Length: 251
Ligand code: ADP
Ligand code: MG
Image (cartoon, rainbow, N blue to C red; front, side, top):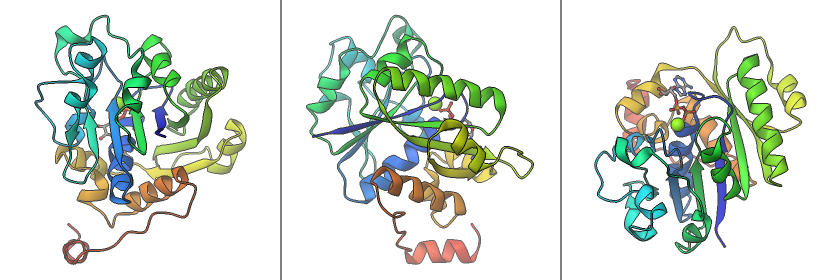
């Protein structure tokens, strides 16, 4: 049976897509048959994180019954399957990811990660509906946290299992501490990711952090979060010869 895990937030720009793109690679590298789905239908960009720029079929075509879900699947070099959303303006209007869960199940995947839209409008609610588990991403600042808390309440209303919270773009000056946040959300903190220009750099290079900078502290944190999703220790990083050279020269 497929396990569908949604990555949600209250506000945009907190790092949902970045998290999904990295976790997708890690889970596929673990040998799990994994797909990532762009359910941000009005702000598609998951494919871009993997360098998938032009594609004939998208999740929009599947929702509109113009294509079978299998036709919207694109294999990434890491092994993860990407189901992108359309980048075209015309496709954005009046599209809701309804009745998608059944179609996703027909793919027979082990794990599917859903990159949800921001906020709590219909687009996000339909995405939450099709998930088994949810991960909440937030910045450690009060307005973003309060929005994230609302998302948690909605998830509970839909009887979804919220696995925990990922704190992203954390800086030294942030006053809200991990322990306090865990108590505040009444959820475990699955990972704490620092603000670091390398994240932007890896997005620019269209190569997720865990592939572009596998030895970076943030990549370790992504491996820890992937381990949490699987209910086990952090996924172990097997350093290749190329990784060692890169680490030596700090590139
Ligand atoms: P969301 O999907 O929640 O809108 P994104 O994953 O698209 O958020 O990230 C928004 C922007 O923030 C992107 O430009 C991304 O490169 C950047 N970003 C995400 N996480 C970090 C981080 N830890 N450090 C620096 N920049 C980050
Ligand atoms: Mg996004």
